[in-house]
Length: 285
Image (cartoon, rainbow, N blue to C red; front, side, top):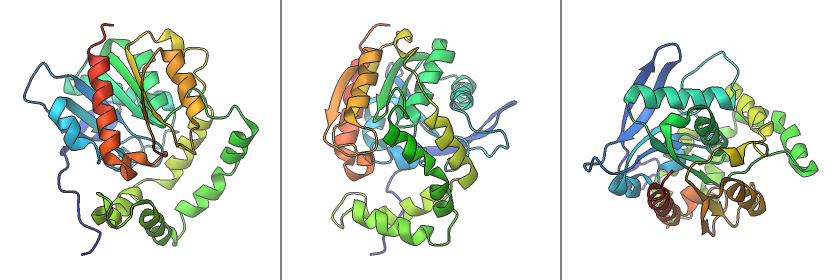
């Protein structure tokens, strides 16, 4: 069987037009129980809502309403000539929440989505009832090794513009997802979804993430918080994740997964996310 099979279920997708900001692609599910929490899903760097949360959509649909949008230049996200900043993308997310009348929401941010979620809570506190950060950090460039990694960003730019990108992405997906993995039948679909993104904006987003540093203000957010810590993460070290959780006073759930665990171990990722939603929703602000 070919491995370009579309996923068996995706939430309904639609375009949400926001005056002065643009048109945003949003995946949305409405839970039949109006008292169920509402969650805003914010994906990581180079991903899309589908790439990040595909493995959790079904489990989330059982317990909450949710909306997941693609950030600027990512996936089906709005294309703009304005340089990418985490603050602007947080304002995009807040504008979509207001346009859809969803707030207050529990904001979930994975990797780069974590800083964006924190900016939503900082800049639009009236829309946020809780905050869940996943596989992310207070800052991304404190060590010499991290700064060296970011200096290599132009090399990544050359890769994502190259003709060999599809072949290399297919090889990487084959290594990441064994033939018996739950998402293995969708490997080519995942590669195609990855290639939707705008290379120019991906590089700008990497630069924005490099400069993110919330050490001076994270503790001031004072919102019910949870943290999924990926304990085998080679990209965002667990100690950095724990520092963020401590700053937020977050309830912690640990999962023995690497940074791409949302795809490699979807059941464990989904279960941890649902558990954190339950805990944060039960915590009074």
